[in-house]
Image (cartoon, rainbow, N blue to C red; front, side, top):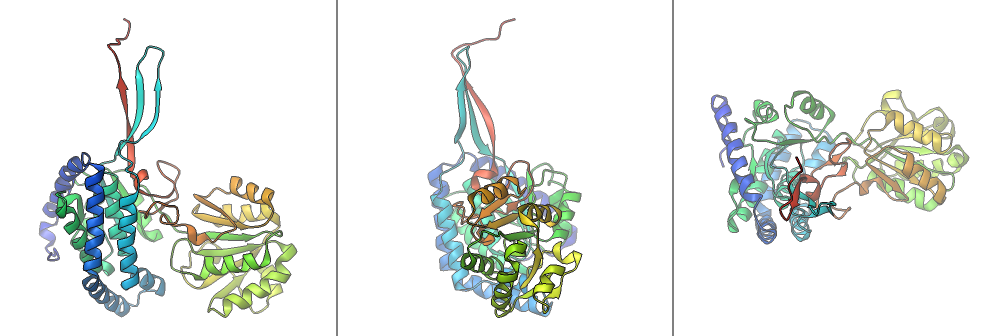
Length: 427
């Protein structure tokens, strides 16, 4: 596939993508569960077979990204190696093994007149996906769309164009092997930014939903310019709150993992909140442990009194998704103080409490207004694969349609089916 570089032909190119996606969606909507599963397993096979080529194309992107001095978080999201490519293949197989959401009956009932009603899951249609950096999203978005009977139009970032094209080629081979249209998963094959504007316009009413996944600027632009519904994935300003009844060893292990497992993912904890009752004893150990791993701590006034070497945190630090080995520390007055801090600075993504007090855990889980609420575990479980969804298309932080990890079942809408025996309404 040659990169499309002629801006004069961009409108026609994008219009053709929309038309072919709509036609593919109509075909995919009727595809059997078995056919879709075979396609996904075939995609996994080709990702495995093409892994050397995918890794080589990713190396091209990495070299270009380093020349552009992209951040370490962006480089980590962009990088592929053999293990990560095999994880992509495994994710495709996991999605293939999931129950088919299409046709599932959410609810059925019978009215007094004998009419039988069913609320049945059905595909959305054509999904437009705009994302940055992570080439694995190409596979996740394509596979989840196919599983849910949707066609998709993918627009990855320019920094990952070669990686995305290589992965997309493997996905297309999987579709073609089982006789599904290759246009069921389309990758916009240009780095021209005007293509994004055209996609946000809906490509002549052929695109039904836009899902952005990336930084704050990308999300803001999509929400501002989109002329079709948007399912937004916002930044991950995640918190881990160490309650006074926390198990000390457990708390240290959880916070280390929540911050340092991968600092560039949206589920990475950006702020740790600590009850004053235990702050004096646990914060020195936490500081020693994290700083030895290369993490910089930035604390509020009370935290700096306990550890004078901690960098003072500014107001903006608590409102920043660092995506780096930087952890904010705040001492809060009890669980209500933690909830107030999260309400002020959080993004509604993922927040956790570490405690052995069941009542405190229940209070936190019921009152914190976040898409994912966790007790005694790392915030890095904010991942569709960990939820058993096979993969995710993003973590939705809004309140409409879907919230939290968006898997195949969340890429459906519904219709009502009525079955009668000749009933008519009285005049």
